[in-house]
Image (cartoon, rainbow, N blue to C red):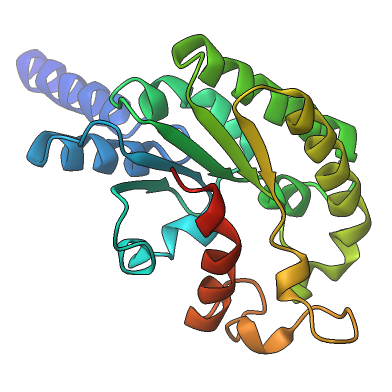
Length: 218
């Protein structure tokens, strides 16, 4: 009876720890690792890192047919997540350029968050990149003004402005402003380039992004 009880406790103990909660986005990172094992990442590619605006751009290579692109966007991610997984997002690759789209979810996750905190998070990630790649091109795509998050626009605009100023002073760095091309003739955000969730982009929206990004692509 004692042996049966001991075996049961051992199984219960093993099961408990196997079910231990993994960090947020842990599985996404494992999927990246698996993809890299199955297909060796190309050198001198353009590495996209960020949140769902990149994740959902599954056919990004079609928009930039003459570029080699590695898309490592994972949906819902915040700059805090990019910092947490920095090693996993940077170490496996030897890119010639990194383009970042992230920060929007930081505000959505905490509506009271101030712009200066998001800028601080971005600068932390930028420094991590520079520790690994001191001389490559690093670009940041401005936070888009999604209709579903209009209450957050004021702080997003402040963050965009501060990050733009920071990137302007950095060598081999650019701030890619996609906000203007997403406006109509009256200066209002075009709702027709968003999906029904009023958050993610339609193919037309990505075409607009492409038109702005192209001059910056190495």
